[in-house]
Image (cartoon, rainbow, N blue to C red):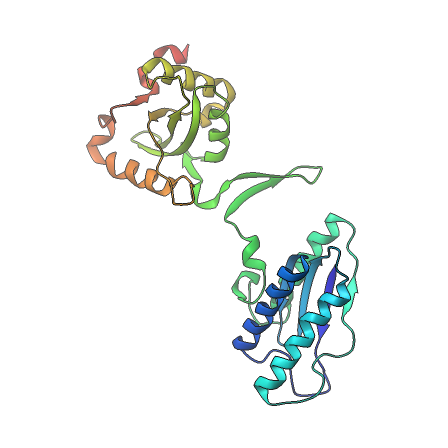
Length: 283
């Protein structure tokens, strides 16, 4: 459901004059969302109108919009020392029944500031939900419309001039019974500039041995294209944030600082194994 609330166009008064008005509107929108339990799919606060894409629950849309705009109108009039109506008539609402149309609707809402000439890119406008859709993830869409996450933009790297998505390699590694957690980062290499290296936390009952490393690397070799092969592997606990996310940036920095210059050919961690340790992998 899209609600479009327009201002009184016959006056010089506009419903949103400054950032304080915008914060007031969004605060009230958050309160209504908490009270009435509807889903907020997108929003955009333009200078003379507001776009909302709402997934309505049990509460009628009319009640939601009344609670939102009646409160905002009172606060706006008090703050700017004015009286009278703020919005022109009843809001406009359009029923959205198909996902394809919903995607187009969200794009339309977020592109409003661009079409109005306020900004050049939708993510440059601070008063819309566009930024919440920009996660930094790279995804692909198949013919049926399903979206598959490939990885984060800042996690992608090149190895032998091929673009590597750590997410894809990690997904394969996680299928091995010995792997509890895995993180793949680029490891400096004098020939290929960088090669995929996996940091692996083992599942209970598995030892961080050469045999285990061989089994995991062979498994990855069988399930990945040649240019995506994991060529180095290190066992250990993975660094994480307070929220439990793997700190890949720390692993990348540690790898780069440890393997520099002439040290590239010789530097090894105690529980690190390279594909050169297993000539049988090339058979």
